[in-house]
Length: 273
Image (cartoon, rainbow, N blue to C red):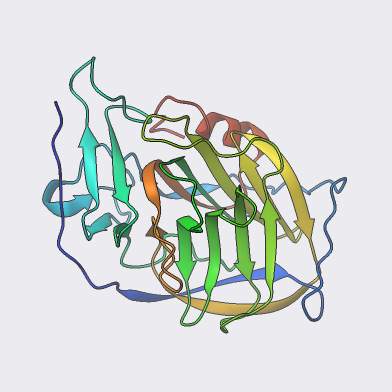
């Protein structure tokens, strides 16, 4: 058996967020598959961990005592499995279910500042790999997403995209997963997706199921301020609503290393990570 937690539409609060991403002039970017990133000296600081086990009153709590909760919008709901013969949640007993038709969850402000290194991660299961690009996580500005983790319909792959400025159709740094294609279906295999921006190395890294797929590096020449909280299941700029299941959403100030990403990718909830 399971319970549904629903929430009426709630307007998105705004907050300033800044981070610097290395870029080359114009729209050209260097992609270095053999480049070795410099490790950060300090450990990442967890700003948000949302296990998505419940959402009383339409709000999914943040494990961090002072952290921002996620507010459910549209028909977003938390599936909670208490029947061993029922559909298993992605991790634990609960997860976030989205039908791709105007559903999402969001924080009222950005959980990570973005002006230095940061890490964003979530586990996702795609319900339908059709001709729609679908966003799992994003941080919006006024005219562009500062960063988005999404299923790209044109390639049929998971990808991360970072806009170089807060302008419509701005150049982007894009990294795609070139290994396994996303599974699909209501009971399909989920994938763990993680993005790390390593400021000292000027490097953006994209991990799928704990594995580094490709690395992108560029000279730091641009920075702009995002204006919205973390979006789960959509792009606030383009829509791109996600149809499927999301679980284990995490946000850190600082760049997580390979070991930490591998731990996040496990199918066991780790509240102390």
